[in-house]
Each structure stands twice: as structure tokens, then as C-alpha cells.
Length: 155
Image (tube, rainbow, N blue to C red; front, side, top):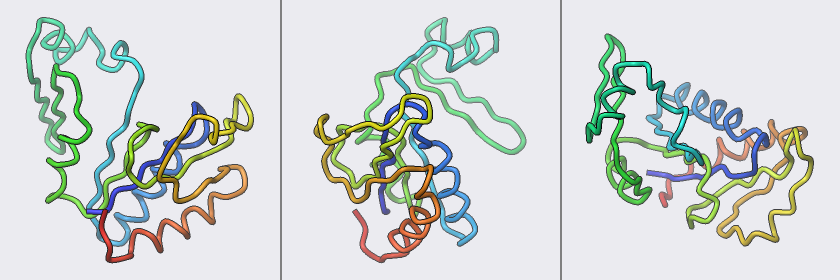
């Protein structure tokens, strides 16, 4: 399994880029997983839904099944390493949005559409394969990602 993080501050285009990466991988017949980091617990699960009510009452795990998908929610502190280990046999490529301080290979998006340019060198992000600005580099990033993801080496 190949792993790539996409990191950057708010409104840098992380989700947009990952969506395009997922579409590219799926068009190639590859399996892909995405893990997204969010800084808040509140507002993620609507507390007025059955799932939200089960979780608020303390359910350790809630699974919602629809005809076309399954959503599993766990009431526990996340472990990125454990989640990656669980996915290692299931997917070809894992994309991680966020977790700036983790040591996996990453692309850093350096321009926030709301706050301007960010000097990421000052925050100690390591294992950076590429810096990019979604205003100008999106096509080049996707081309680079296509080549990177088709490489036989895994992380």
C-alpha cells in the first residue's frame, strides 16, 4: 500500500486535491482509502440522528448500513497507526488529509484561499515530497501524483 499525506492550513485545497486523486485512482481501477483529520468532535455527527443519539448515549461502536454503503463510527481516541495497519491489506493507495506532524510522505499546500501564503518551513513539517499552490499547480500535482502512485515501491 502506498501512503501519501496532503497537508496544509485551512482552505488550501486539500479536500479538492484528494477528490481529484481519488477520481484518478478509481479511473485506473485502483482501490483507495482516505483518512481525514478534523480538529473538532462536535458537529461531525448530527446529534438528532439515530447514530448521533447512540453515540451520545455511550455506544462504543455504531454501524449504519444503507443499501449501498456502511458507515462505522467508534467512540474512542483515534490511532492513525492502527487505522493504517487495518487498511494495509485492503487498498492500493491510502491518502491522508492532515496530521501534519506524522512522518509519512506528503504534499504540502502552501496557499490558503482565505489567509494567503503560509511559510510551512517554520512549523517543522518533515518528509515533504512536494510543495504546491493549488492556484497554479493543480495540473502539475495531479501529473506528479499519477507518476508517484503508479510507481511499484510502497511506503
